[in-house]
Length: 148
Image (cartoon, rainbow, N blue to C red; front, side, top):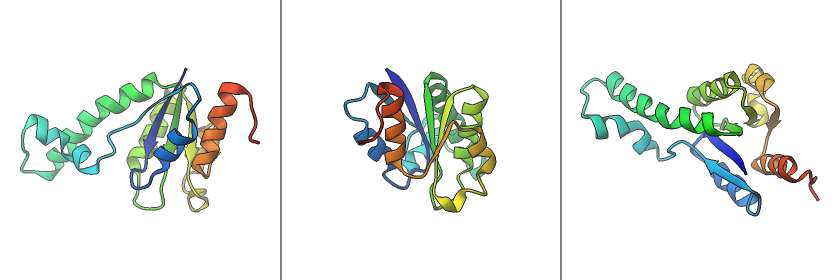
């Protein structure tokens, strides 16, 4: 079984496209919490309110880091998606963390980010522009089969 961690952008259905496309393959998927509100507020919901937004965010980031570190550490392959909206510093951090751990890294982004992500792309074993390409990579890794 191949363990795949799906990190990055949370505003589109790219994860579902990969999971649906990989049906029938021996793959287990994991990801961060993709409910933006739950992710932002988990720290104060569990550990108590913070009047200062900095500490509010920090509590959430640290609790989320427990899940993220475990997911990346357990993964055979880490896929990091950079979307068209927002600056996704957390995605870049996850890519760097996965690379530092020696994980097989697939970066997923459109052509508009090629220059900005050149160093991140250089650390990856593959750079895809569509979720279907990630599925094809997983299929090839597991079966040796090329797209029909």
